[in-house]
Each structure stands twice: as C-alpha cells, then as structure tokens.
View 1 (cartoon, rainbow, N blue to C red):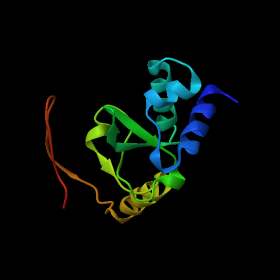
View 2: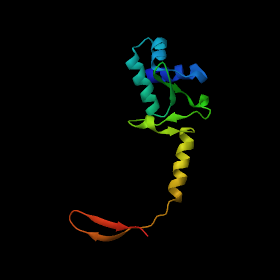
View 3: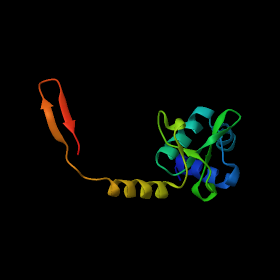
Length: 122
C-alpha cells in the first residue's frame, strides 16, 4: 500500500469528522508538510474532498461517503474561492449537460487586420 493510499484510508477511518494534515501527521508519524502533500495529491486525483471549513487553521479532508452535501473546494490556485456541492461524478455530469445544451453557432468575422479581429455571434 502506497503512502497516498494509507492517507486516504486514514481519512476514510476518520469518518464524518475528516482529517487535517496535523491530525494525519500524528497518525502516520510524518511531518505536517509531507502529510499535507499526500492529502493535496489525493484531492488532485479526486480521491478525497477538501471542505471549505477549517479546523485549527487547516483545511479538512473527507471521503465521498461522508460528504453528505457539504460544501467542498476545487483543486488548485483559486480553488479555495470556488465552492462546490455534490460529488465529482455529479459535477462532471452537470458540466456535460451544460456543454450539450450550448448552441454550436459559428461567429462571423466583421473586421480583421494584423493585430485585431472583431467577431459577431448571431
């Protein structure tokens, strides 16, 4: 079992309470930064969720079965400003539905030179 899998299992065992990197460091015996990295990578892989709430000044991570409609955050820079609701699969389904509903109209080029292009979509 890899360290990331062990971290995910520890988050799973924490249940509804979830885990912070400090709490994971106590369980695994590594420093806080290494545990934070493990949690961040698992979040990037969409194996766990990072909640909008904090405990002890640190983000809380939780697995899908204990999410229960809690607000979570997208991965990456600026992700903490985006609040999401629903599982990764539900969010992907919503994105696909919206993409299917968008009109596929072409734009008309009204003016174009070396530095500028003006287009219009009917």
